[in-house]
Length: 146
Figure (tube, one colour):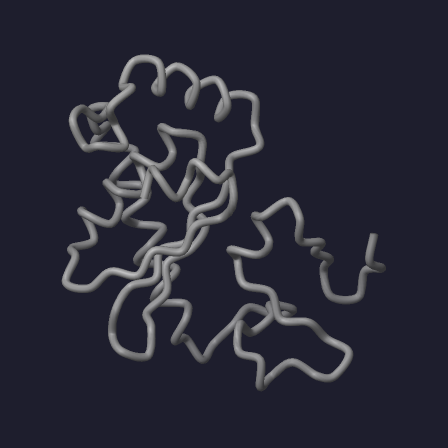
């Protein structure tokens, strides 16, 4: 994953048989090296698709530079930053909500479906992953595009 992150582009990782805690730990490690958790979805073959995107914040860049200097062999799996249980638990909770809302039939008023079938010809369908990526423009329904 860290090798893919070196490109500076969003990363999609498909894994199977992983626990929530292990997925959250993976996203936590990505956050330590300049990325942020964007989304987790179940694929049609019952695997998890983990989406992470570059963290544009100054704090994210600083954290990445510090951890790259402190853990130069991290991409080899030699040494990684220690986990922070509260941060990992928060990521785990976000992942549970994200995968649960993927299959939910009830949506808050004004919320968009992530299903292309529900998008009309002049409505676009954005996933949370696309919203977090800076190259993708996003607007609320009814607001003009910027």
